Length: 378
Image 1 (cartoon, rainbow, N blue to C red):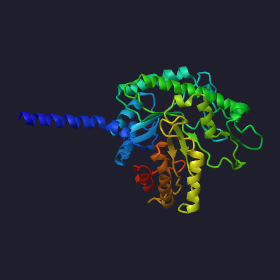
Image 2: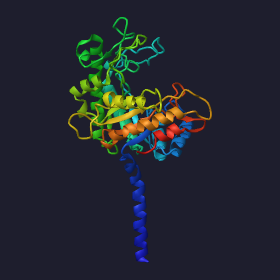
Image 3: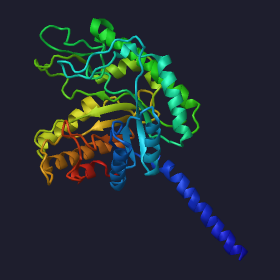
Image 4: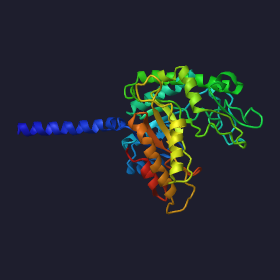
């Protein structure tokens, strides 16, 4: 009997340890494969429905914001209870007197203050207590991603509306960030941004549950054809993702983050045609992932692809997705070498539900084949 008691005690302890270690093991998955799933505007009941759908699809990681109210903390708790960990899309915080770009506006860009108005003190007063509340609730995050597409006028009011160069827009390079008046204003925002990253790193160092949770720089917009003339109909400037990373690296980025956030929406021309597939593969190597390095490298950081996807504007049920299936299969094959080299550590497809731009993969009351392929383990 004593032997049996000892045996069952060992078995019980082993089972409990397995349950406790399961989330940690999930977070060690390489690469992290997840889904963009914004839920901040939903009711708790609506969130529960979506969390149930994500859980049923076998999704363990989502990229989402967490609101600062009790509902936000409870959302993170309910997600974790379903085995879903959140790459927290952390909000920027600005000076109280910062002017805000109006929304709506003729250029169809988001409203809000300029990145150069980011305030490290106000950010600390927001982030540190929020992280403490999440930890009190037992939340182990998948990562911290600060801000979104800061090299684009869509999310950064340091860019002029319209472009300052008469008659055409420009994608600024590294030299422009030092010499062009508009680009220098954007560069000043990048310096403020680095100060907010320093706050996250400091707060993380005092964390109990998230001391090793990776910090990801804002997902940047990567232009897949930067050498081509700008479309004359585009009235907005931007900064190349490469120039953004180079400038911030020169000012200490690599001491503050564990990975670079990357957004890529590859051209969807001619699915299944070898020449078009080669073009996507070559552009991925030359323009999108060229800055990514394996963990521990001196010359850079790995990439977290926090948005990627292919739109499907056909809203019919059942879903028509032959082209998207071909493209997702192709891109997963293109990503694989970078994953094997540890140059890419995470991929989050965009998006679970998206009624405005056609990227959603939960349609007609079910997960599409496109979505199933996007979230499949590598």
